Image (cartoon, rainbow, N blue to C red):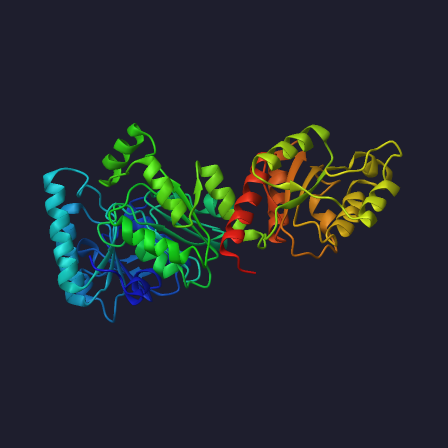
Length: 467
């Protein structure tokens, strides 16, 4: 279809009213859980549609027999009906003046001639009535600012934040709470799925000026309009970082992509060159993808590659030094004043350098006072662009968050914690990490992931050269 104007996507991503066509009174059915999510979060109007249960209520929302009989305007229609009923439902939506539809049904262009015929009919109706479509095979749309959630899975306590996830799989919206925690909070999760109409270019154009979105995370299986995507991504990436995770990189994976969405995955080396040219940040796996997205979401901009390391454990500190070298980060020289502060509070025999060995200072001053004292001096160093701390966590005794009391800086700080093997240690450390991230301090589990994130930030801000 033609390039989307932003108002057409606004009807879909910022609707004031939503119809769920195929709504169900049976718990755990898709048409039931979608209404549940809307009823428990969304502040707009909700209209379940199902002629078999007309007049009944689903989670307090009255059921209508058709979209055309709904009183008032309908911005978005979520079609949770079998593929054979999608054209009929679109005709009903068109007569009502609905401008946006999310199609949940699968089995279109990815499933043989009948599926292709149905998709063609669906698109013809969409053009006829000027309806924009997300899907088919879409598992939903999430917009935290609008409190919109049309997912299949029951949701609760999704973390709001600055990451917009746009994908071709329903995994990320189905597991919205989990992924929102991984990236430090989401603004949107949009499952484009098979992209018969609305695609990555459309959503990039929309998200470019979305105030709630700081970073865009794309999961791409395949594309149909490569040049348009490249042109759009190149412009948007100058304003907001775009982190891309491309599946189908192997030959077998490429075939799996085509079976899933009907899209061609393309040759890996061509995709990588194109993404680089467009200014996209490429991730090799989900860990790297979510790590980098979280870094841009939580941390301030990074304009230099000079890093200082504070570590309680020499072995992990050495691994971090290796990782910094691998990713192009430079261990910086500390100021004479900072070096003197460290010497005064450490063992006489300790060689004071970067990385800073915290062990003896912690023995002399106590764990938190030592980290706090050294941090207070280090953040004043003009030679320091970013800081990585490896700090132990003893639940109830040593809480890493306390090391940052009264520390004010615009330098990116990352923490990797080593937690004691006590009951519920992992659970307690997760709570502590979440508290740190609320303060704008990113937490990662390994040194290599620390360095990889900082390198991604530095390389992006160096390229766009905007302060």
